Length: 338
Image 1 (tube, rainbow, N blue to C red):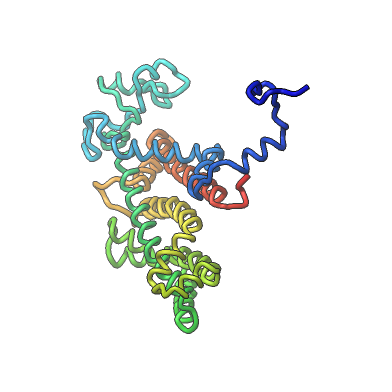
Image 2 (image 1 turned 60 degrees about the horizontal axis):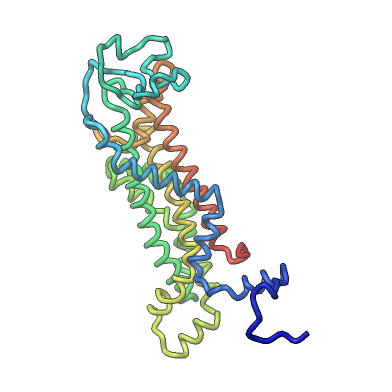
């Protein structure tokens, strides 16, 4: 039977199944590397959860201290060591947010305090909610500053070393080997003792040897890329060394650079918290997560809330950045593309 071409309709045709779907995927619109990486990152539940937690923590670090009227260094000895108490949630005794301490005493009623302190107070009557988020802000600031300096120094050092090679590379790599042979913690502690504890001294102490890992990773990437065709073509066309390094080699190494930076941030936060915990970090009245943990550790058995919240936030920050770093490593890997 002959069918007139004007009588052809869609219901006369059917898809060929799996083969047709594969062809549709192959013929899909072109996508960029970053867009494909973002799609793979969204499918990674652990990494995306870590990203959400990081955004939430950064939001609370920025605006948390302004959510009540208490200053981070405001002292009041009439409200010392108050347990956490949160409106509405105080009616759920299992949460421990009712203002009752471990001895079963309602401290708010005993001290005639009518205000709510969501994370409780410390031994000087300072609001822990405000202090913890103020400390988180300072800890994140130190970590991001140290990571940025590591990024700038490491990328510049590693790319120059790998690109020029020869004697320059040998000398620069011997310097890195000397720095790697010195324990990082000893360098940090000695520098802080010389410069006195503070945000600047802690940051400089972490940067002195912190950029070495970034430099080695960038060097490896540039060594792998500088012999490829697109670099040789640029050289043939007369491109300058500066344009080759910053216009071709570094952009094509962004994946490992971003991943290394993601792992540098939690390491810097832990270092700052450790230094503050042993008394070599920031000094009062400035608050940091390490200082708050140190203060809470002294009264852990009697007032566990003073240690619990700050420890949980440090743990969440480190877990979130590590989950995000693992997810970025997978999303930037072309082998993961389906």
